[in-house]
Length: 467
Image (cartoon, rainbow, N blue to C red; front, side, top):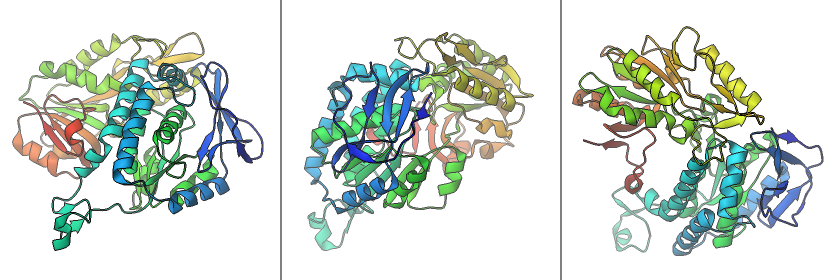
């Protein structure tokens, strides 16, 4: 578990970068003048509680000066920054960065975050692909009637030019999965200078990524890593033109009315299966929606709604999910998230409190599987509810936990509201029209697409279908 070390927040130049995390390493702030090691440092542990690294926490003044440097900097020309992004993605995924090989990074981030090794590798590939495709991806959002450069001949005849809304983009990053760092690369592709505040739980991924970007050609005044305590965290958002933040519902509520901040919170993603479809034919997709990424992502299914009796579906899901093994995260066959034992027990208490009165198909006696080294795997849970309007369908926990409930025509689209993703297994076109028209459903997948699915060629598409 992490613990803060006392000391003044006076930054000083770093003298060494981590070669590996076999010994206690220093993860320095990466400021506009290079790496800085502060006297105020946080010890970051692995899932067993063993210390792995010391994270430098920078004070408010350091943040203010770093953001001023970003604002004063010139943006790299388009072709230069896209080439640098591609090089950075390859370095991050396969190279030695800050003295650490790709293999050493994957093992270290498993131990630090509790993310299974297979999922870390998926995240690494997602970051590599994003670095290559970021500019093409964001161009899909460009209005059809606009061009991307004032030099385009159409711009001379009155066509609008599509440009970014500012110069500095800030990220308050999450630590639940390394792949969250694939998203802010799009801001770099557009020409923003970017400030990243890493998660205290898992700062290694952004440290490696920012280091790779700098090694690939982005200047120290183009992208910075600003670990801070909570007092200085707000300064990062205050000093940026646009920001992206991660957190719980309280974060969503805090920034919902701020047009300069994109809050990312619980996904509350769902699967709907109507009576005109045989649920057994889609069981693999439902299980994958729940369990992929260890159930930690906002795109994992939190709820499964079934037109008809939900009990057979819940029973089948419990049988399949119960077979998942409990293993240390660095094991090649690990699929479940791992936490320090007391943290895992806290999740368990929260789950059992929320599940009171629900029918337990899996996890009713608890979900903590003690691995004997100070850590524990969080095992899957399946609970059946009686009402599609039950608020517990929106309870999202960072492991494979799903609530199964009946769905009725009377409940309609309202039961699917406030979802990042809905996978609709149905042939009812009127229902699909209603789901697509519901603004609180951000992504609609029709048929056999798991809720975590992303079409690389059209990442901004809101509706996807399969036969």
